[in-house]
Image 1 (cartoon, rainbow, N blue to C red):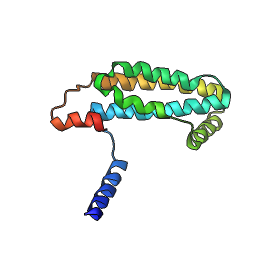
Image 2 (tube, rainbow, N blue to C red):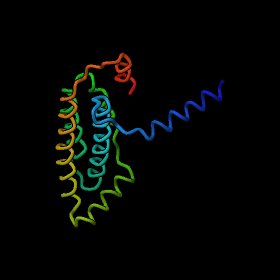
Image 3 (cartoon, rainbow, N blue to C red):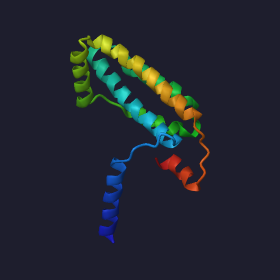
Image 4 (cartoon, helix red, strand yellow):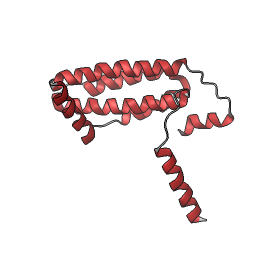
Length: 145
């Protein structure tokens, strides 16, 4: 029985890692908003360590502002606040600086601007989707996603 449970957990884990969000599902899109926000918050932290300033805080404020009006889906955006600087994000910044031949301050200002625009667009898209689940299991998804 234990082996069956372990096998099921491995199978579910493999499926979850290849899951692509459904663009017509407000739960998936709110979660994806949180995922994108997490990347931007992490990049804001990279910018803060590279050039100083409050880039991370500006992005967090954007996430908060967009999250307010999402109703029951707002909790799915919480994951954005756990974004932190990573080696991958620092490497991305370094690559972009070289490709576009710009300074770190210019890049970081653009990151904040892009975060505001993209997160606003994604949040507007989620707000326009109907959130009335047709299947009782959809209610469970809201709390377990």
